[in-house]
Figure 1: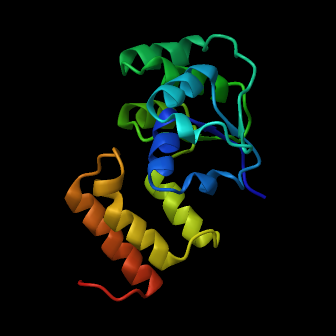
Figure 2 (figure 1 turned 135 degrees about the vertical axis):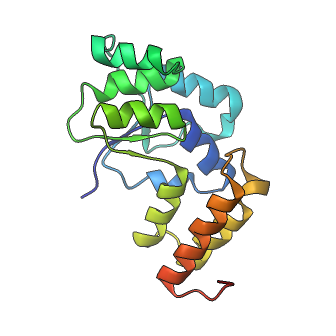
Figure 3 (figure 1 turned 60 degrees about the vertical axis):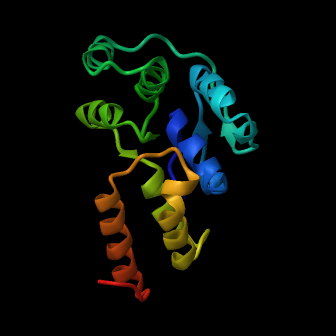
Length: 170
């Protein structure tokens, strides 16, 4: 069984751009705070609604530690809402592509993953073939607004090709 997730706008937008939003469908729940839902509707309206995405009831304000970290790292309202929701959840994973939000989540001992991790998970779970994931990753700069350092992306692709036995330049 998979664990529940709370999702920030980035992975929803980027997975939709890559025609891979369905990769979220097998989590036990994929919760989207209202402020994140509104952000996705503004930037990528066709990504919502999906039957596997849930809009939880509004949560209480974040605890003082979470609030201080959100302010200290200048997180936006969506990321702060996700972290406030995560504080009320047990064994829940945070999905975000924002580096500062990842740092805050890690400080709070919350497991965090982003779009790349979700694509790789898709291959490992059999929702995409390894070759399909490599193709998506190779097309990512032209198909998505997700910025990944080109050298890092090339390194990830090469490591995955080696892991999955897919021919490619070393």
